[in-house]
Length: 228
Image (tube, rainbow, N blue to C red; front, side, top):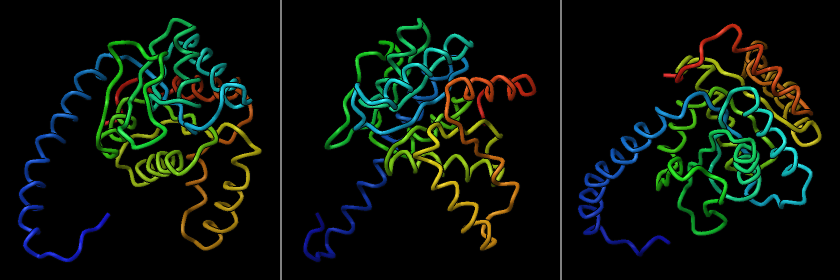
């Protein structure tokens, strides 16, 4: 909540901002040190509010198991819902299960399926997003809310602008994502705000087998390594 106007507090804010740099640096150092050792992984994104009996929870768990069976680990945001399902599937399959948890006033808590040495906590969303982008060999994006959309469009933007190397971005769930893709094609593209080739950055699928096929085809051509 904003306080009443008080210009005297401005210098205090500037001082606190300067010291915050060390905390930010610490999160980067810890993240780089731990995630540089995890090997090739695929990130699974989706809503923290999805319940275990929901079809998308079950689909995320199934997909994570297949991802592990094909030689990848799994990274999630570390919380409940789709994130929990992704870590659960990886854990059951005996694969690497990473959780990048964010400190939030509601919703978020570490799920129990993350490897003990691969659970990281972040205060800063932007540091956490760097870790996802740097150490993921692909993004599988399942139905979610604002946070899921944030991760999706950040990755698309970074690839589109050549700030990072290309990797697969896969939307799983045609019923959920079909309307967004149609809007992108008929509104963004028709308005000239993106180019036709930008559409190639996104795959829209409806099955876990399609996800695996896209990953396998891509990495028959490209090396598995961090993205920058």
